[in-house]
Length: 113
Length: 111
Image 1 (cartoon, one colour):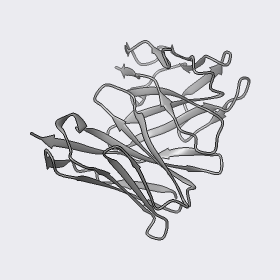
Image 2 (cartoon, chains in turn purple, yellow):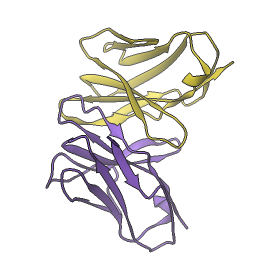
Image 3 (tube, helix red, strand yellow):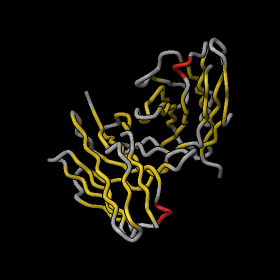
């Protein structure tokens, strides 16, 4: 039982390049999330998916797109990376309960030059 | 706007003492308050959840209180150990609104 897995662990991009961050969970959770974490800013929600086939914007969605490929997988795409997107990205999943307790992946550290 | 505030300064305490971390929230009436632990280079890990109708919750050496009048939660680690050194995040949730996290407080337990 791996929980939430993310690939890659580290990535360096040049401004304007594109890339997709992958996330998968094996806990049979319905809801999945993408956060970014920056010093002094805490975790900020980029996008979330309450169930397979649905996605919604979070607090900071600009510059990102997501795909909920199936119940297990939720990917985050940067179409044209900018230095402001340098951050640590976390994927999380949760059961569809009111408490929304989150289970996080190990994170992807992204640097955009 | 909704705001979750945690002490941004690191908290240094002596091993064996009780560490107390504070989480204050404004413009929000959460049904649940959660605490997570985050180690360097890793994702946050869920520790405890307390409901708005609960005053206190305990789990081993951890204790959480929730004061909806003061809009504050306190997180206590008793008999602290160097292995407790980490950043602790509080988060509010409720009514199927998305979880909102604080910025975290870094705890350093000195041997």
